[in-house]
Amino acid sequence: MSRPKRHRKGGRVTPKGTRPHLSSVGPSGFPPPDRPGEPDLFTDVRRALQAGEPLDLLAYASSLVAAVDPRLRSPLERSSRTPSSGPSLSDLADTFVEVDTRETTALLAAFHELTTDEVLRHRIEGELAQRAWSLPEWLVRLGDATTDRAIEMVHVLGDGDNVMFAVHLPSGHELAVVVYIDHNVGTLVKDAFVVPDTLHHLEALMRTTVEGPGTEWRSIDLADAKARVLAAIERSDMTWPPFETDTWPACRPLVEWAIRELPDGGSSYVRPEWSDADRQQLVDRFFASPFGALLDDVDHRSLLDSVLWFACDYGPGDPLRWSGVAVELLLEWMPRKVMAPADFLALLPELLDAYVRYCHAERGIPAELTDETLDALDAYTHGYLRAIHADSGDPKDALREALLSFDPDGPMSPELIEALLTFTGLTDVLADEVGGPEALAALDDRPLPDEPFDWTDIPDDVHDRVAEVLALCDDGCDVRFDTEFRTACRRFLARVASSDPAVFRRKGRPETAAAAVCWIMAKNNDVFRLWGMGLEVKDLLAHFGVTGSVTQRAATLLRAAGLPLPDMGELELGSIDYLVSARRRQIIDDRDALAELHELDDLD
Image (cartoon, rainbow, N blue to C red; front, side):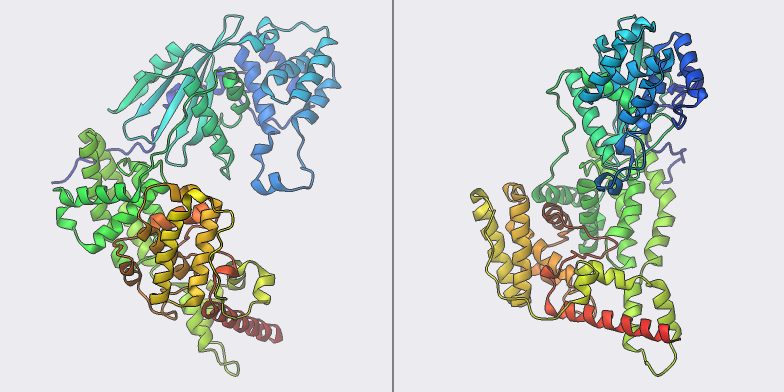
């Protein structure tokens, strides 16, 4: 039976109609503050002071503070030891200290409250004490603002929450702060704004603009509101490039000021933890249900493992939560993260249709929202199928085949030319795999030594669990691989256990952990590729009594070790410590063949 098509609303954010228009937040709104020192700044501040509405000036000052916030710089710029090319807030304040006017005095007074730099605050206090300009009462007593109520607007599909709270100024003015926290992209602040209105009136306005079922409004503890917003801001600061709207992050200093005096000790969002046993029980429940019974075979079970990997480890951690946006993100993620034949991946839309129905039935989601989610699945299926079939071949396979057939005395074949054009940066790829250009140049194919396991820095309380996994890995290597492979697995396991021993304090089968360790080393060494040992994943996992997939556990171990996750099906750990001699010989052959081709190109 076909479903009635609905207009897909996408992620649920604060209704656009409730956002402040530029004219409602001041003469300049939240302007790009690239004009300090120019006459327009004085005009804007003067008008803001005359308007009598505190938000006019606070929004302007917040945008100035945000513009020089180092969090807007890229991570490379933040970590660089060279001086930043942009001014700091201290530099900006110095320019206003040098010009004694009512406008600069007002901005300095706002800066004093918006910054947490105690040295700068003390310097501004000294300057303000020497100035005779009259400022509005609300600005003089800005530090006495209070907050007495917080609410949140949530939705049953869980794409994101609006956390809102009221700020009362001693002058009687009230501001309403709205922070949208998006769970699909990491539970971080994706948007925020402040309006010159009461929280009660803003809530009433927003209730009239929200469409469809599933939205809930509820009061939350002030400490919890602070904890959630601060944690979400911290996560947004770690995201590059940052999310930007017409009001965020320009209002970030104002938001941070508003919650600064809220009580500490609140509870932030708690990410659900799904153990391997929990995930397996969910898989079994689904395939035992009427929704999944007809799909219960090895391929669909393996594919569902990947779906749960995405849901538990990449989203907000809830494998039963499926919105239209979550479906869209999964269909974009699968072709990049799961290395598998296209005909296998093509089973996903049918599986996901049944699985979404099952999850929504178990959670009691309204049918209207289930239809909306399935409409999104219909809308994005064509692009997904096109993506998995377009990438069914590996360019490196074509390059390797072309290199092996290359005749230095003859012309370059069209296949080789095409492969080189596709992978002109293969030398860089090889360098990344071994740890850099110098490591690539010095690479040798000496076998890894037979090393004992390194127990250094591994806490005593996890020794027994680690020893179980170690024994299983050693046995697997003895049966399926060799001494070199065993050394690589031991090195990796020791790194995980010493870097994040908490991994071994959680529930989980040691067989799954051991299978994941060996799978990681096999992927890193291209064991599953045609020119490798020819071992199939299912055969490796069968040795440990594991069915389905270990990609979820592998991702956990890689994160614990601080190593990169698989990308586009490839897994490269960036170190020769985990490369066996056979794999290093392949890399050396590729390196030398590319060097020869470059020499021929130079001669031409």
